Length: 179
Image (cartoon, rainbow, N blue to C red; front, side):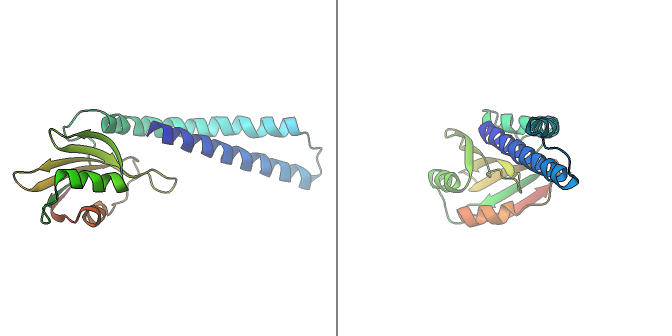
């Protein structure tokens, strides 16, 4: 997970640097100024390092506790959970089958087969930071509890329940949105 963030920030840096250097080069050529490539590189890289560094630091500070929680063995509901869903096992899906279906569509970060708990998240991309999920499988009550939390602070209501139903075939019983 942290590796994906590193790649994201590295790619962002190169894109930002390349565009900044290109724009500086175009502006100097259209204004008729002398083009000195080392100066253009310095003028492009320094602002890129500062800008992308500040953005990356802010994002990493925001996301780090959530990533650490996903990778930890802590099985309490996270303090930053935003939505709690309860699904019924109408199709009598086993824990092993549920785990394999989740592994196909999500990134599983932690599993505890004794307590039947999973932690997983959606893949992060530039347009969607995704969500982390703590799933608890209750075989006696035939229920699945999911505590869902977004990675970013800018959050738009996601269709996790519909997506989870599509993946597992389980019916939504209860939805609780926390403020």
